[in-house]
Length: 177
Image 1: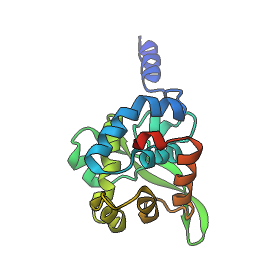
Image 2 (image 1 turned 90 degrees about the horizontal axis):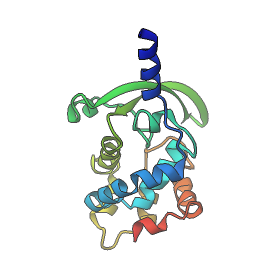
Image 3 (image 1 turned 45 degrees about the vertical axis):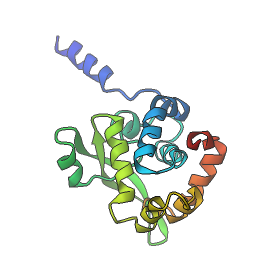
Image 4 (image 1 turned 30 degrees about the vertical axis):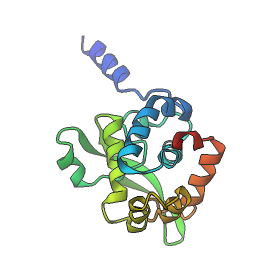
């Protein structure tokens, strides 16, 4: 019985074999609903999902419901009592002009929507002031201005250019309509 229990647990906790198109189809409505509340262009959020989770199985995205590569912060546990936990992953970071591999804490969430909520609140927490200013001026602000204002989200200096490239290559403009 113990062996059967372990097998059942492993099957239940096995990453779902998902690529970007399946992830997007599964979470598209949540991304659009979130955009209506936060002002963040859904194409940008979807592009970040692509960049952070990739186009294949991804344990952090598919098992731990963190499709945006969000680093752990203790406030996550306070906001989502018993629904958010720290988990350690190896990650590549761009530090002092070079890529290094380190172990770091990431958020693990009970569901995708909690991870999406944490992703969207980043733009409003004061750390990304330039991006927040674009969101506060949605009548005149543009998606390109928002992408240009994304500072400190990732250590990769080409991250902002990658967002634009993914939006074009994956044809994500329809999400903003």
